[in-house]
Image (cartoon, rainbow, N blue to C red):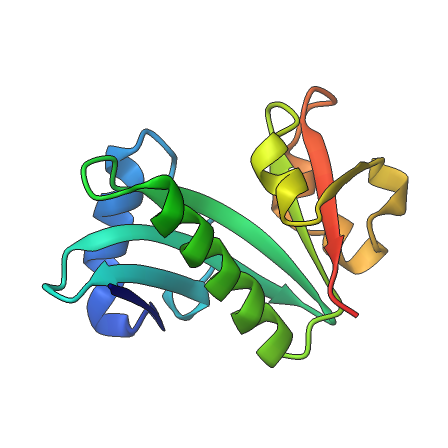
Amino acid sequence: MFLVRKATQEDAAAVWDFVSRSGLKVDGLPAIESFLIAESETKEWLGVIGLETIGASGLLRALVLNRSGSTSERLLRFFDQVVLFAKEANLDELFLTSKEESFFFQVFGFSTISLAEVPELVRENELFSNQSDQRIIMRKRLI
């Protein structure tokens, strides 16, 4: 059993450490309040993900999993909860970027789109302005 909760200011140092230990850069990540944490009943962190809200869209950032505590079932349940959080926040769609297309995200209804299909407000995010043409952009409509 595990729960997914919103990160608080008290979680900031631990989230940045968790993300940086995965090899991802923490510079430019959204505010700590944008992160969701999956943790076991013993408070062991199973994963974190940023859910940055931009207008009616959500931008998923820095998905990091604890390899020792992660199973396929837990990953699926974690991502189900992330999508539920996005719906409860009344977001219309979710976006993410990746180095390659991912069957995992396709299972959750994400499809590959071109940069031109990304709303201008979302495209203004530094994640898109600093991307090379080599990145894949995926979208999931929530409505």
